[in-house]
Image (cartoon, rainbow, N blue to C red; front, side, top):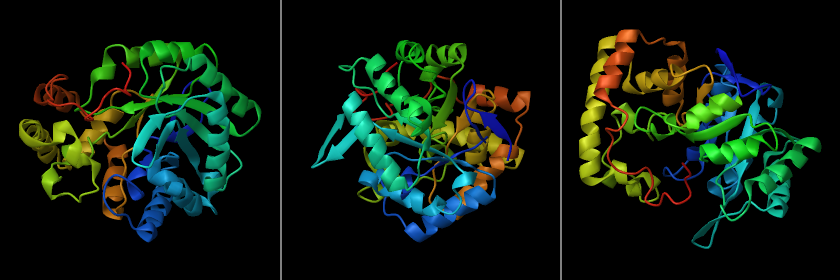
Length: 324
């Protein structure tokens, strides 16, 4: 698979990465045997960029990924995150230097590795100066525990402040045909600073595939049941946009999911989508999108089908942790 570089002097990663979150959390029950098979197949296909976080499955996802890459560590660019604390039915964001140091050591233990290739601040606590948090992250680089630093879902201003402390290789934020808000200020700032964009949910949590059932039919523990843009009247209106995407995909002889991924890839060589899946058949489908090159006519048709402000409904019920 073709490679792309994260930031100035950052690691080379596959054009498509693999989001591992759903293997352990948020999208219904998982199957560890199949999940590990998915990770191994991804590596066989040249997808070397794996994404997890300490909050996914309350640490279980890091442990799963660690087991999967134990004998193939040299093939992997391994990314994980700190900052979102869950437990006892509560959720909080913690960015203090003391917490960051402890969180990194815990992630290293769960992953079973001696260093993390890309370490993200998962969400920002606005009560902690970002300079303090990134300063602590920079110490981890100096200690050899972390190779490169990243941030997730932060504003252009926060990204600039962080970059003044230590080079930031990647900004991970939601980006897809359905989520375009960062194009106005955040993506230009990232490019100005030499920061790559790692795009999570590039198929809009499966919605852009056109194959997602009504959220009421999803398992009770599937978080998509509570996402405003995927429910009720919003879902019905947004499904009309998906139908237009499927028409373009059908004309091209590809799936809507592949078209959605190809669109993200076409936004620049500094953009790396990380579609998540826990199923081998979806992995194979997604991986094939890395070989697609959309024509100018196809890109224009998508621009008409899904204008930047066409999607209705917010991404999350509570957007308070999202900057920008």
